[in-house]
Structure formats: structure tokens, C-alpha cells
Image (cartoon, rainbow over all chains, first blue to last red; front, side, top):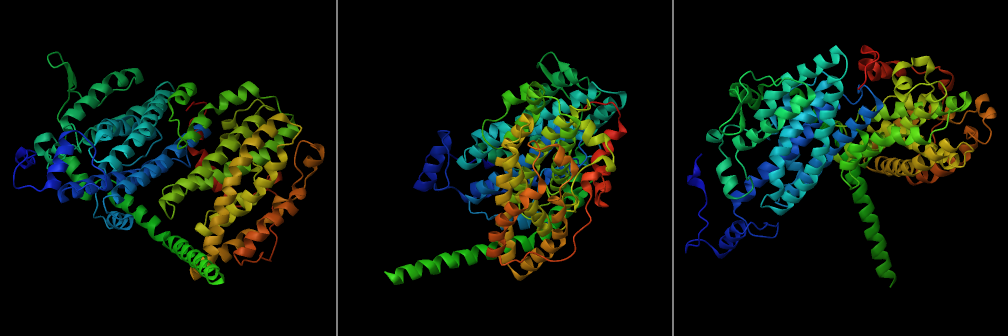
Length: 333
Length: 280
């Protein structure tokens, strides 16, 4: 889509007072809060983005939780558990932010397990080695941070505030990933090979996390006009690569792009051609682990149904007890 | 590196455990005395229980019945890993071994865990029943171990007791919910409790080691009355009865284990053992 869908934010006679107020708030870089009027498109767009983000956190627990039971030291085991647990926490804040827009957690969960909702495609790649815990932290969380830091200023208040907290934790996650790779690169030949092999597998998928190129990104223009999104996909991807190159040098790993070179003119690192066919394949559900990730989420949800039903039934009984105790108390007066 | 992580970690409560665990080594090495062989053996008893239980609970993360439980079970597992690290580190001072030497390079007969922590996760009710029993026991244990004549054990217990108090509450709430929720949850809770109960007796069994550690270790049999008193009102409110039935043979403290432990260790140790001498 092109910039023709950018909303007209100037005051004209044919928009309502509410819409004018909304446009003024956006224009002034103020926050929109749940009580404020907002266009239906803005609400929908946010629910889509926030719930996709929440789903990504939840599905994103899986590739890492694979290694909790096999982490190679107790310290690494503890850090990995804390990290995956943080991701569950992020999912919770984000679902709550979406709930302020009228979405329900049940509907969002149902959409996810029915395969109707999207989540970040990166989590459809497998984690066959321990070094993948390093690459996910360094590359995947690193890319997520580049994407998410600007979201802390997103125009919708609850989303922006959730992102502030999430970004703080993500930067810790990225550092621990870098540290895992550093330790491997300073270790035995086998460990170094494990690290390089993992970086080779995760580098390109991490670059694809920024989404399609700007001239092929259907939702971007409107989101930028509404100040939900503040930088273009390509801009953020470039920023990320510029950040990675010196870090890769410290690690001693090679980034698997033979065409990567420094452009003296732009003072940026120019990258080779991204294979978008792969991205579209994974997005279409044909990635290495799409089916497995969804199945595990569905299993956890279905296996846990009796527990959630029990909790709900118990809460109802407790409420009824409190209620009848109150009624008796009133009657006694 | 651990100091760097500490300085940059978020100041709020979420994620604080990661900070603790990364700084644990430095803190302990500074203050640690050397354990005698008997004290080291006792520290292994307690450390192995926590380690095996943490390993089991860690497997729930991303598979729990609701997101809140992914977080809660993860928290409990993290606390237990912290206790295990402190205890194994201390045990290792007697034989010049690290916490990881003990966790990853011992085989089954050298482990000292109780059979109850080795019992598989099962369904959520089994995990909760196991948690309910073990957390109540650990709370009574650490409450008393705070007064140990051994300063390191006393310090570990003082920290652990506060965390185990939360675990106790978490499992108690779930016992009540499951027992009084739906017919299905009640049936599952009763089954789980009766499946786990045979392993309770071993927890409170004494051993000659305890006689040699008078004033240092807590005598397991001395905790039984307090344990019974603490769980009785919960079971009463939940309208559950203490199951009757066989008593499992036990023997974990002398290296005789359930069949489950070998599988658990195989998974836990596989990567580390493929790379002897490597650092992670």
C-alpha cells in the first residue's frame, strides 16, 4: 500500500469533534488512553499488532524451553529458566494491553491455537544446539529490541508502557545470549563450531524479523501515520546490521553474508540480497516447525482445560459462599 | 561477567532471580567455609532433592495449564535451583568439586535424592500433590535448619525458608481449587495424592549420618509432627483424607533410586558429558 491511505489530520468540516480530538492528540505526540475515542481502524490495527506480539512471546518460549532440561551448567539452567519465564510475563502484559481495547484473552488464545492468528515467524525455526540459546538472545532478541524500543513511544498508552518494561528485560536477554556465544567462542574447537553454525542458521531469519522491504509492507504506512510504528522496516533492519557488525568482531564469528560491506558514502553496512521466498514460505506455515509449535500450544491448552475449569468453578463457589454469608449478615441486622 | 549482569539487571522484582543466580558463586566463594565429609553428605541430601525437583518443574515451562502457572512454576523451579546451587557448592568444598561437577558428573548411585522428588510430573494434580508434600516438608526443615550450628547451612536455610513459604502457599491454594473445583479435578486430586503418599514416609526416616551431625543437621523424624499439623487443616478444608496404602521402600539417601532418576539424569547431563572439560 502507498501513502494515499495516510489519514487527513487537518481540521475539516466533515469529521466529528471526537475524531478531531483524536487527530490532535496524535499530532501533538500525546498518548491515546483506553477511555479516549479512537477510529475503529486504529483499534483493530492495535489489537492485531499487540496480540500478534503477545502470541510471539508465548510461542517464542518453546524453542528455548527445549533446552531448560539440558542446559550445560546450573547457572545457565537458572538464567534460561528466568528468561523463558520472563517471556510468559511479557505475553501476560501484552494480552492485558490488548484487553484494554476490548479483545478478550479467550478469543486471542483461541485464534492462536486455531492457527488463525499470526506470531513472529522466527520461532518456527528449530533449536538443535545449545548455541541456539546464544543466537536467539543475541540475534533474535537483538532484532526484537531494535523493533521494540521505538514502540515504547507508541501512541497507545497501555502498549507503550508495556513495551518500556519489556524492553528493559529484553536487553538483559540479549546480553545473556551474547555471553553464551562469547563463552563458546572462547572454548573448544567443537564449541566454536557450534556457535558459528548456529549464527549461520539464525542470521538471515533474524534480518527477516523486521518484515518485508518498505515497498512491499502492506500495513506500515497507516501504522506510521497513526504513530503506532515510528520507523520503516528497512530503516530498522539497517540499524540492526550496523550494530551487529562490531559485535560479531568481538565474538569472532563470521556473519554469513559474503556481500556485506561498508559503504563509505552512506557510512552504513550494505547487505546482500535477502531471500524473501523463504520468509514467505515460513509465513505461509511451511517453515520447519510451524506445525509442531502450534501443536504444543494446543496440547498445553487442551491438557490444561480441566485445571482452568476447576479454578473457575472453585472461584464461583467461593464467591457464592461470600455472597450468602453477606446476605445472612444483612438479615441478622 | 556476573557483576556486569547484576548492575544492568532491572530493579523490579520480575527477573530478580536471574540476578541472584549469576552472583551466587562470588557471594558463596567469599563467605564459604569448608564442609566436613559428613556435612557435605548432608548438603548433598538437601541439594539433590532441590536439584531433581527443579529439573522436573522446569519441564513445565511453556506447557502449563495457564500462563500464570508457567510463571509460577518457573519461579518455584528457579528458587529450588538456587537452593541446589548453594547446597551443592557447599558440599563440593569437602572434595574440591564445583556445583557442576556434582550435578553433571555423578551417576545415579551417588545421588542422594528422595524418591518423592523423583516421581514424574504426571498431570497437573500430580505435580501439585508432590509440591504440596515437599514444600510443607521443606518449610519445616528450613525453619529449623536456620538454627544450625553450621553457619553456611543456617544462612542457606534462612534464605530458602522465605521462598519455600511461598511454594507452600502456591501448592496449598491449588490443592483447595482442584479438590473443590469440578468432579474431574477432585477425582484427579485424590488419585494424585494417593499415588504420591507412599513416598512420604521416606522423607522422615532417620539415618546414622544424622546422629553424627547433632546440632548441625535437622533430624527428619522430628519434623513429622509439624508436617502433619500443617497439612491437616488444608486437607480438612479440601475434604481430602490422608491416603492409606503401601509404604514405598525408598533408599534414596543411600543411593537406591526409583527407575525415574536415571532418565532424568540422562537428559540433564547429556550435553555437558559430551564435552568433558568445556566451560559454558
